[in-house]
Image 1 (cartoon, rainbow, N blue to C red):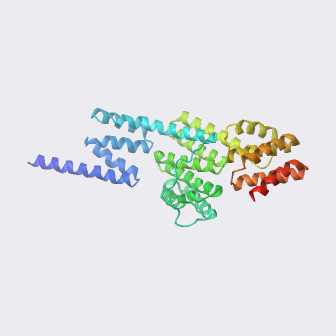
Image 2: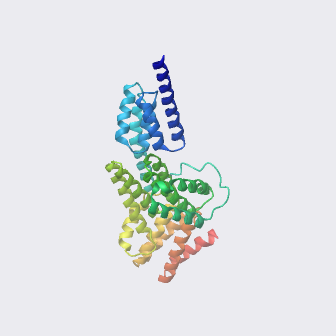
Image 3: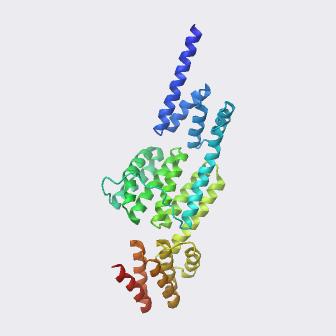
Length: 344
C-alpha cells in the first residue's frame, strides 16, 4: 500500500510539473518551461518529450532538442520529427522573405490586430527605442526584453495609420525586440520580429535598416551554429548596404552608383521603389553632366510617380529639381515642376 501511495504522489508531482511547464511556456518563460518539461520527460509522461523538444528549439539548444526528439519518437510520438524539420525551415522561410524584400516584391503579409488607441509621434517612438537600446547595450537583452515587447505592443498599431518615418520607427522596435530575444536565449522567437522589421523597412524603403536587420539575424545564425544561413543573411545585408550607399543624397561616385542602380531598377515594378531608383539614376547622370540621360530618367521617374503618394519620393524629385536648376538643365527642371503642379 505504501509503495502504491508513493507512486501516486510521484505521478501527481510529475503531472504538476508538466502543467507548470505549460503555464510557463504560455507566459513566454521558456527556460522555466524547459526545467519543468525536462522532469516530466524524464518520467516519460505523455508528450512531455515533444513539448520539451519544441521549447529547446525555441531556446536554440538544438543538440539537446535533437536528443529529446529521438526519445519522443522511440515512445511513439513521431510528430516530434516534424520539429527538427520546422526548426531548419523557419530559417529558410526567413531568408526567402529577406530575398523577396531585396527585389522589392510585395511583402506586407501581416497587420497589427487593432487600431492605435492614440497617435504616437514618431519622435516619441524613436526616443523610447533609443533609451531601451542603451539599456540593452549596458545591461544585456534579458534586462530589457520585456520592456521592449511592451513598447512594441504600444507602437505596432501605428503601422496601420503611419507613413515612411513611422514604419521606420516601428521597424527599429521590431529589430530591437528580435535582438533582445536572441540575447535572452530565445532565438526561436526572434525571427518573427526580424521578419516584421524587414517588411516595415521595405515599406519605408530604408535600405540601411534592412542591412542592419539582416546583419543582426546573421549574427544570431552564426551563434547558433548555422554558418551557411548566416552567410546568406550577411550577403543579403551587404546588398542592402550597397543599395543604401547608391541611394544616398551625396553623389560621391556617380559611375558606381549608376552601375548599381541600373541593375536594381529592373527588379522593380511600378511604384515607389522604381520611382526612387529612376530619380537616383537621373541625379547621378546629371552629376556627370549627361543632361540627356538625366532628362530621360527623370521623365520615367515622373511617369512612375503619377499615381504615387509618397513624401520620400516627392523629396527625391525635389532634390533632383534643385540640382537641375543649379546645373541649368531647364528641360529637366520643367518636367519636375509639371509633376509638382499636378500633385499639388
